Structure formats: structure tokens, C-alpha cells
Image (tube, rainbow, N blue to C red):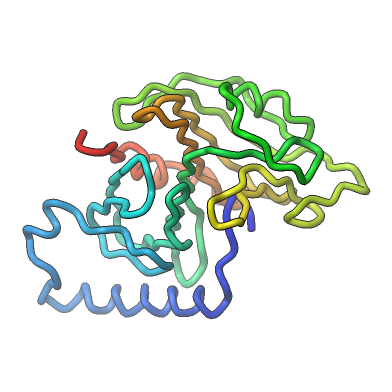
Length: 232
């Protein structure tokens, strides 16, 4: 796991094969699904699955959200009431991913203990002993104001061992008992914190290998820029 949850290799392989099939079918005329369905958006699949280009809306995740993806994107994790993840796949390799979390619980830094999410999640990031953060910059997503900043994992103590194992930092606890985690590897991530999305604190992050981040970031930003909340 990076800032994400684990998908089995079998599911990953099936996902990649589905993407290839969709790419081939898109070249042959006969579009599936009605124009009406495309206009109002499709429900985001509950389980990992390749996505056709177009608009998708959450089913379990709250606050309800919709966004638009282009060719090559997939739902890469099971949809939860508090988490969504989609990723871009190119030539059977995952380029990067975007994670949405309705933050309810965090891991107390330096421990395996889960506590209620702080009111000021940005300050929590800034004071986390194992994370380096850039200066927060103002941003907005779907008309909701927030801030964004880049995050890297610091050098971890030799004896550090989290729920996620060695070389990684536990961040959020999710409703299915899994975790959002950051690995101490050559990855870059951009975090967006929205303090009041219909009364909820929503975290959005996009991440990829450092050598591909500058390529992936504009693609991820297009998806984030298309986000709408509820009936907005």
C-alpha cells in the first residue's frame, strides 16, 4: 500500500485485462449504454473495475460526489462509505491514483492507536513527527474552499513498526478496518484538505512514483477539478 489500500494481484491482473478489452472495444463503433446514462453519470463500481470515459458518482461514499475520468482510468479499490480510490493505468502499469477519504479517525503519531480525527487536520499533518509538508496553499474543489500541500515521509526510526509494517506510516483508519498509509519510498503525493463538505472533513490526495509525478499530476488535477458534491 502507498497512500492506499491493498488490491490482490489477481484483481490487479483482471483489472488490467479489462482495460485492454475496453480499449479494443472502443475502437469498433457500437457504444454501450445510452446517451442519457452518460449525461447523468454512471454509478462508480463497488469493486475494482476498469472505467469507461465519462462521469461517475459515488454510491456508498458520503458526502456524495461525482467526477469525470478520461480513457485509461479504473476503480482500484472497493468503494467504502469513507473511501474511494481511482487510478490511471497505462501499458498495464499503474501510473498513479487519487484517494478520497471522509476522515473520521487517524492514527496517533508514533503509535498504533486510533483516535478521533482532529478538528484541524492540516495542523495534524504539519506537526506529525514522521511527515514533511510544504506550506499549505489555498485551493477549492467543487466550490468548497480548502488548502493543498505536498507530503513526504521523513526518515523513520529503525525500530518503528506500524500497523502497516516497516517503512510506512499509518495515516487514517477506515470503516472496513483497513488503513490509509504512506510508504517511505520514492513517491510524491499532493494532499487537499476540505474542512466543510456538507459538514464533513474530506481528504483528497493524488500520488505516483516521483519520476512520473509531473506527468501524472495534470491528469489527476483534471479529475479533481471535475468534482461536484451532492446535487451541486
